[in-house]
View 1: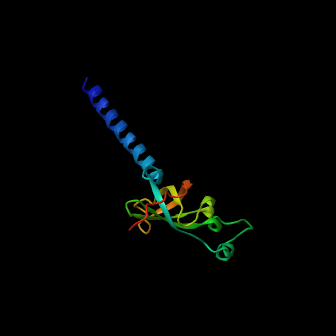
View 2 (view 1 turned 45 degrees about the vertical axis):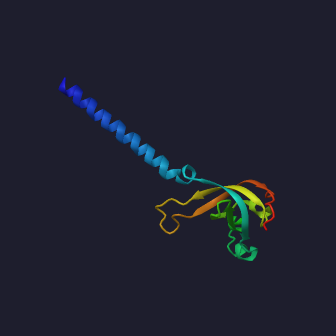
View 3 (view 1 turned 45 degrees about the horizontal axis):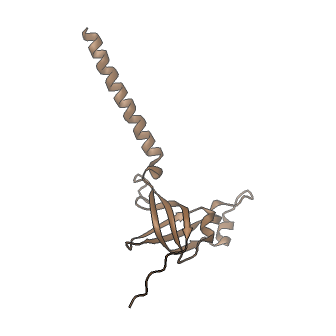
Length: 136
């Protein structure tokens, strides 16, 4: 009887440890998606990597993803400005002053040099900003 109780205890501990390990692995692998941030606001700037710099990095005749690399900044209505990098070709058509809804993916905190910043901005929606009333 004691053996069965001890076995149940060890099995329970094993299942809990296994579950926590799987959960931790999923969080580590999908950190950017789990903690992504949806930003809605006016585009302040979209800067593209100069083509000649991107072409220098070409190896094997393929076009490097850096050829379509952008740095973006979006100001929300509350005044907070978000910046991110992106390698999404959709950003090529975005112009300063338009409004956008973007999904920003944070670097995980264990990437110490980039922690707290965003990358791989995904353009969800692009539209003309509503006109604000004239200020007196």
